[in-house]
Length: 258
Ligand SMILES: Nc1ncnc2c1ncn2[C@@H]1O[C@H](COP(=O)(O)OP(=O)(O)O)[C@@H](O)[C@H]1O
Ligand SMILES: [Mg+2]
Image: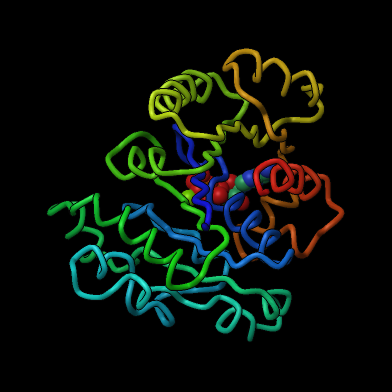
């Protein structure tokens, strides 16, 4: 049975979409059949890392939530579409599907205005696992706690909560960890991103955060000008396999994927 892995953070800009796209790609390069759902309906973005834009996104998660299409109709084979791009040839031999959220202003406004039946997300996730025969379904989420993040946390086999070494993140993360415990997520992991390596002893930082939240820290990822320069243009870990950021991302993969 396929696993559901959600990537969440209490605040925005922590690196959820970049981490999700990178761990999903590393898992797919390792032979796993992988799906990625963008549940950040208010501010979708993970499609950008795979070179998708309004020219190649027709049907989306929104259409499924409005009852217009079965969810598989909004599943785009990344290996076929992005794999054609010379800059993303590494995706060609993978098996990956992206279910994007709509990037049309009117459709984002409509779903925020009208809401939707959150239970449909649960059905949709399980339908994707079955129809696409997925080993792993990754859920990229909107920051903070709302109905869809609570649902995705509740149904996940594993939850990764990302935080920066920032006092605003520290407080919010305590709230999310608490919720995840109450919802009894089988595997709860913290990932620290954007750690200043000149300031922190990375190992000590991971240890102290782990003690604070009484949860395992999968890895501490350095703040990196190279990752910032990539600017969500491509899958950094695939382009720079020996970079310190990639090495830390690989630790997350090892820890989270069976
Ligand atoms: N370790 C890092 N070092 C430098 N920049 C990073 C790092 N991780 C992510 N970023 C940058 O931070 C921004 C937010 O990342 P993103 O993945 O979109 O976060 P989220 O999905 O949580 O909002 C992007 O510009 C990304 O390139
Ligand atoms: Mg994001």
